Length: 227
Image (cartoon, rainbow, N blue to C red; front, side):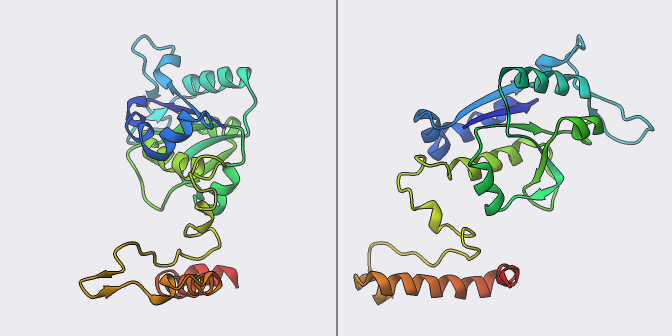
């Protein structure tokens, strides 16, 4: 997969993408991530990418010209499955969306700022808008990092255990069951006997029951969605 990220702050991505699963995916050549500084596409001598909104009002708006120039250049080089804008207006990111996006070959992610982007970009260039939650961030970079991480970890070959992602919370519309590791007895706090039994079928049954139980307690809305 190739991911092209359009941003005015490419430096924000340096640390999150230099460690852990995303770094592993890059090192393996499974994902190729490129950053494009929007200011490089500005026709303004001061490299401005924003201007005052028509009609007045507070805040600034990201201009159409540099955004269009960047996207047009990228599209001349390859075909993209989606051009995504990280926006509070977009569909809420969930596991189903992440699973779907992880099957794509090439995507563009545009990080917004200020009061947003010129509406003509949304109407003519953006194919999908995604929100990571019902709140507002200072910029779209943090949302893009979350989006990338949720997608990349699902691509085959990224995780050491191919089945690991399949047991994550939300994959089957249930929260993940409790997990334990050594020691089996820590100051009288014990690991459930079933997990030490070696009975695989009973362990699978126990984990499913605990997933349902935890979901009913913590996120009953998820069970309602299945009905």
